[in-house]
Length: 158
Ligand SMILES: Cc1cc2nc3c(=O)[nH]c(=O)nc-3n(C[C@H](O)[C@H](O)[C@H](O)COP(=O)(O)O)c2cc1C
Image 1 (cartoon, rainbow, N blue to C red):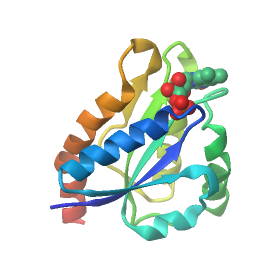
Image 2 (cartoon, rainbow, N blue to C red):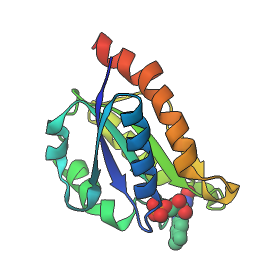
Image 3 (cartoon, rainbow, N blue to C red):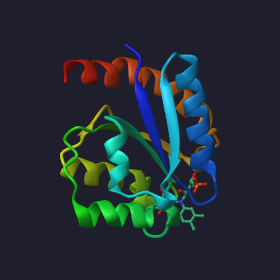
């Protein structure tokens, strides 16, 4: 089964965008479709465009979503759309040196979408910027397994 995924990107300095591009390339190489949307000007209507989403976002401040994701997050939190048709995964970028708020940006998104009835598929992929690994390489390796072992079976059963 091939899937059509919309990748929603929250970033301050571009790392999440690079991750999204590599994830898109890996998905397309495996025969799936993937579109990337920066969170900057999005509102909850983006969830009308399909049923499969991947949140790729970093963390800033005291465990917050980055600036370009703030209005999107607030629009979902305030508008509380029903998202029971949505299945989603999370790639959360962070840094373990921020002890209490490690990867909270992506985890916060996951909690919000779950509260609104969306189904989180599989465990979030967390990346630690202090580990010395390249998030785009790890994510590109992770994503095809996530789609084929978790997302596609869930969509098929739905
Ligand atoms: C000012 C600042 C604050 C940050 N705050 C956190 C944080 O609270 N928790 C966390 O896990 N990572 C935090 N990070 C790390 C970033 O989320 C991480 O470096 C990420 O890979 C950046 O991705 P981006 O380029 O897509 O924004 C912070 C980084 C900076 C520069």
